[in-house]
Length: 147
Image (cartoon, rainbow, N blue to C red; front, top):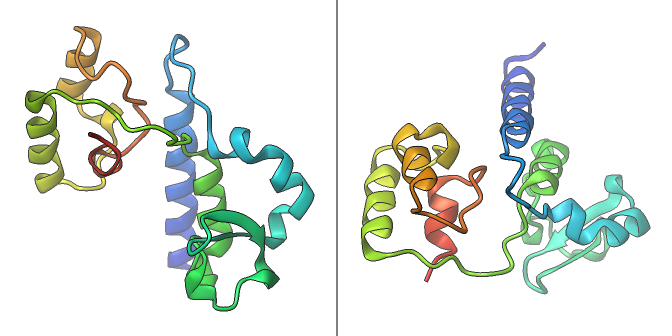
């Protein structure tokens, strides 16, 4: 396997493992769940997400590849898969100042770390903090979607 293909495989494998680790009591709607009918209608091979219009469409309907959420083309399929299994972020998360500041510290140390990989954060979640936060998100994704 080429090194880049191997890295993409490991990244996708780790993303699937993250989803398996979800707690049973935590209902998470993925992008695939939310857009299921549109994905079936368009087809996964022709799927694109037009960032200018903010909606799914056929790849041929986008003027420039750089306007697609799944760009660059070389990793397009891998990016589609990763997006499909991510939680749908249709609402803002409410964080206390303490929770927000703590996530900022984690983000400054390791921006792409997943919430579920941070033992202290997971322990705090069990004790009542970060109540509405899906554990499969990265710390940066949480910070980008909070009020």
